[in-house]
Amino acid sequence: MVDVSEKPGSSPESPIDNSEPWVKAQIDEYLATDGEKPTFAHGSPLLLLTTKGRKSGEWRRTCLIFGEDDGRQIIVASLGGAPKHPVWYLNLEAHPEVHLQVKGESFPGIARTATADEKPALWEKMVEIYPDYADYQEKTDREIPIVIIDRA
Image 1: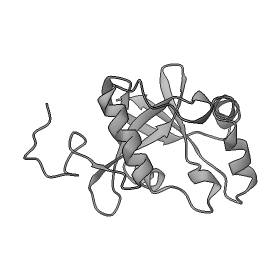
Image 2: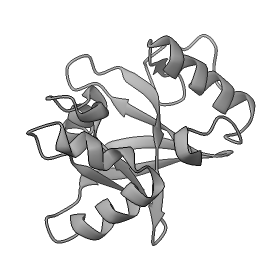
Image 3: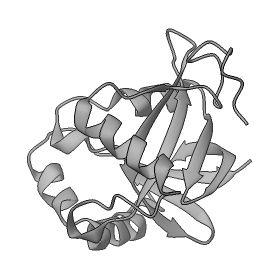
Image 4: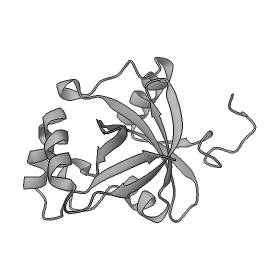
């Protein structure tokens, strides 16, 4: 049970949720249904990722599409093909200790960027799950990272 007296952002158990209204609505629905809802476009599965801010030190939570590979969670730092990496990716680069919720299960993890050797197969897997990733890579000059998260 979360200690309601704990300051928001002070721990993975008391994170600050993404303030974008549609993402916040996804998080709320995810928590209310133990991840049974929502799903994203193309029926893509979602998880909740909580990272520690590289500047603020505050724990922040967002909702992302994911895939699985040999018991690991795989996410894509696409930001819709924007020219910059998403903030959550910059945070986990600085602090690879993350917290995940997959359906009704919450657990700590260690995140890392896929190597050049690992990326092609994982990219293919993630494009199968969410085909728009291919379009996102086409519209940006940056290399979109694939993140592998192992249970801690």
